[in-house]
Image: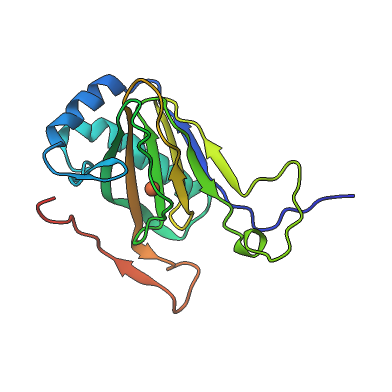
Amino acid sequence: MERIDLFPTSFFSFKNTAIDNVKVINDLQRYSDKLKTGNIISSLHSLHDKPEFTELFDWFNSCLEQVRIVEKYDCDRFEITNSWFNVALARSTMAINFHRHSMSFFSAVYYLTEGAPTFFEDPVIHRTQAQIEVLRFEYSPVEKIYPEPGKLIIFPSWMYHYSAPHLENFDRYIISFNSLPSGRVNYQIASDSKAYLNLKEFPND
Ligand SMILES: [Fe+2]
């Protein structure tokens, strides 16, 4: 028997050991004046245009470019359009609720610390919401990714995900971003479904 896996979902994992994550966390405190608090603490500032994080976002951009080239996307680039950090305080059980990132094509999570894993849900809803489900020993409708400082995960923005309650005795920090295709999009492949997208920075962010 040969098993054929059609239409798999690809995630892209990168690791950078040269980033000083303790310094990045320290620099993030400067942007703690506008926070959204709920199940988790979230910065309302964009980070990708801030000078302290140039090296970090240059690396994020190079990772996005690798994805574009390897996956043969017909667009000039993927451009980061929004970015923020989240904190789950030590032993707080803070968590991020089930969500996806709208107004984005690829999203990403960069782990500055260890801590509670991120869970991604199987996007094949016909499988997860079927009225009759026969359980399998080696299949789960959710997959988890464990934080490691310096690890970046790029994933399709339509993937639903959440983070588990944070129980450890240190603060859990992540930086996340969204991206959109920009420049010439679908110009080589499509005859009509194409566009030239010129993205601008969101003002006063
Ligand atoms: Fe998210």
